[in-house]
Length: 108
Image (cartoon, rainbow, N blue to C red):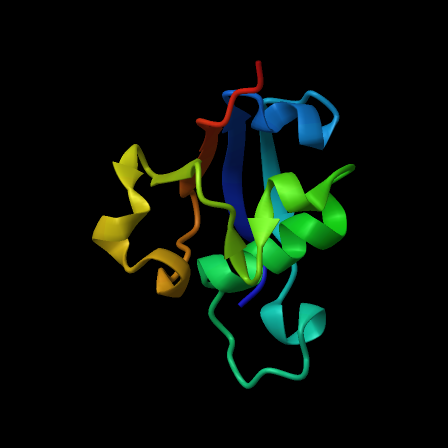
C-alpha cells in the first residue's frame, strides 16, 4: 500500500522535539520499501514510531521513545480516542487518521 496520508500532532511540549511543529500531514511510503525486512504491507503504530524517529524527531529521542514504544507520560490519541482502545502499537493505520502525541511530562 502506498499513498497513506496521516496527520500527526504533537503538543504538551512534545512539539519541542519536532522543530516546534505542532501539526503536520505526512505521506507514508509503501511499508515494504521503508522496512523491507518485515513481512507486512500494512502500517501499524509500531512502524509509524520508527518512521517518526527516522524522519521527524530532531532531538532527545529518549524524551519521546522508550524501547519500541512511546515513553510513559506521552498520551497517544487516534482520531481523538485513547490508543488503548485500538490495540496500542498493533493498531493498523488507515488513510486519513489523525494521531496525536501529548506530553504530560513537565519539568520544574
